[in-house]
Length: 489
Image (cartoon, rainbow, N blue to C red; front, side, top):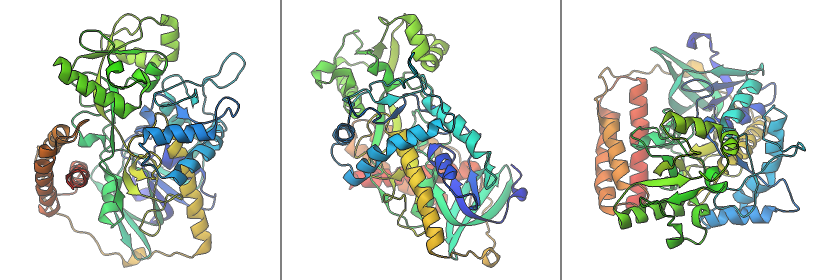
């Protein structure tokens, strides 16, 4: 992206191009000038990797809002914000159906009715899906819709290095290659996704370094429950840093979870067996690994028809084949892995943070809907509902008050020249993997907190040049510091 072609001022800057940011952009009024900034390609985000689907109550005969609310509360250990859960569940069906107007293609039966599947923690079949690539379908179609809007400028392959509250608005610093640019806005919506790259192993893409959480923290916004991290129980067990996810929906369709002896074992830990919530299954696997002395675990869905598996799970089937596993014939090796963040930038029901004119939506936000553990397929729903609510509130605020930024008053920024020392990010990931995995290690948490604090101080005061690597390193260090500080209290 040629940063020189950008305007100096926008009404809204949206940082991140996942479902929350894209859907918010679609709900801004035509007169509102917005800039969407994303680090990599337009379709590379946590949202685009979501496999299972979107949970919503579309059948009030066989399902109900109360049941979905209760399932969400049970999964979240009743640490959820009830008013936020109610908004999520009751408004979600509107947003899911609304995405169809933007050409999102959900699977349907022979009568044209939306197909619904079951996932762990749900008491009814209520997850609508596009095969096993729902997130990619949603992001692709929303990107297509957003890029047609004349009031939205899309700036991809560009990193936001800082967001600062200045003179009634915000200054956002951009970096594309070696080109730097400052742009100004009245409002900022942070929709930067997850924090997976704080860990050695994660299902998240390379862009998930917690940048939005750092920006909000540096501006003094409240960060809440950052230690509420979900570890998905069934990531493909390989040596790669980015783990290939085996969707919850595979267990929802009947896959068995086996230990090293090829035996089902979930009955030792929970009566819901393979369909217990994710945190329960992850902890059960770790406990079973200690009991058996092995990290070898498998999913078995071989008893299902091959044609059904290929049609229902084309992405997973292909991904497993690339790793030498035919899911119709072979066991799928799995192990828990960092997957999702329930905590984040504290927001209200309109996605407002504690900093005036700063909003957050999607995984980087803490709306309170997930409590301590997210119910399967509530994440895309949350991104839709609160992305829309953020946009509508921004429009209300624009009409209530007149905001004015003064970019001509901005001082020029000066940066250091020192190259980033290698190994900092790797060390932080090793610390997090050891100290704060599925079952935390309190001793390692205490030591890890001290060390991440030292690394963070060095990054802040070392006079490093502003590069993409440096900015991601300081985001990772900030997030790790905040997680371990909270866990250490």
